[in-house]
Image (cartoon, rainbow, N blue to C red):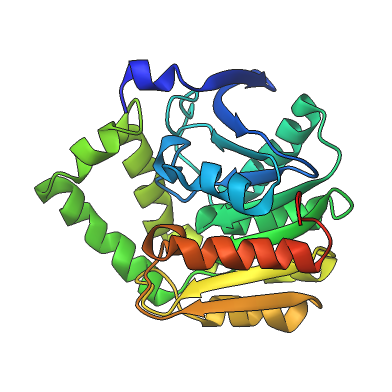
Length: 262
């Protein structure tokens, strides 16, 4: 993504932080997209527009602090960084005047969505979660460790440059915290009982960054969950099997009475 491409986005200052943001129109409650650990607004590609068309709901996506063309992070992340970013979701809701919302989170974004739903259960009315993390698996650590050599020896850095102002900042802040020994104890299982929102749990069965145990743990606690397990699908279901995700999301929102246009 270039500077000129970034101009297609809006910029909103929230709690003193300038955030890159894009919206797609619709009716009913908004769906807020929370990207993965190396993601940004632009890395969703055409999925937000397709989601708005499939559901009829308005869709909003933004690059969290440190990603895309939003303000950089002032310092390295600590193990509680997703809890802090969940507070950022709430600040964004306040800044945009959104009382109630649907959160669609991918990977780190799925974990952040869960934390936010536990923090303000009255404001998060539904969750769509792709490959969320509720604890740190050995598989996840091993896969993230492998990306260090991938970043050093392939064109990954240049590919990330299309979507972020500073790919090194994005990559190392993500890679370093996930490989930090302090992060191995991270878990959000204790927050799950506070969540009241119904959830659609989506997991690729070939996910290199997490196993089905992640959504199993969520489903055992959250009272109203639906599942979509996808074969021949990795860590990014909305890229690997977009139509299956769109159909499932639209059907889920229709079933719970939150679809923008039935």
